[in-house]
Length: 158
Image (cartoon, rainbow, N blue to C red; front, side, top):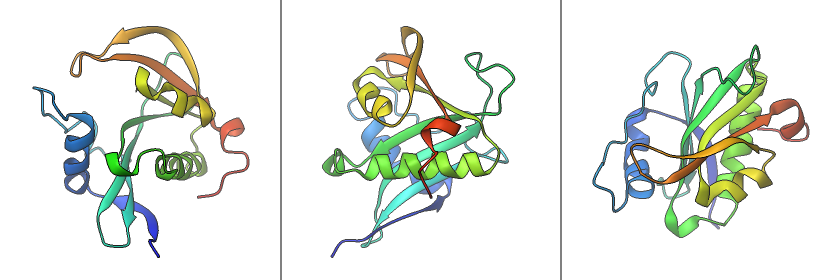
């Protein structure tokens, strides 16, 4: 039986999956993000029973103009192995991360979400705010999404 575990990881551990999922077919192969190595940044991964990292996310303390005065965390680099997308692992990782940052005092989580992933975020308690934009590195359409953790995590446990 295949088991999956969520745990913290280093920046080095998450780079290969970020590269495969977030930069596949792109000229820009940069997978190091601003804030990756800051104090307080948390990288969470889902690890398959064979030791492979199959999903990753990064959580950074970052304010957002969409929730002024509230303790905010930015979600970056959310990626699930292509063969395991739509199996619930991304949602499991997202819920774990949201519960973790809420327990650490965050009020809201926000992200610059690819338009192709908007339905995923909406299913997990996020809402779209503002106009869409073309992200400068990927050249893909994005929207800002935000979740109020008191509402989105009320029944979730890490």
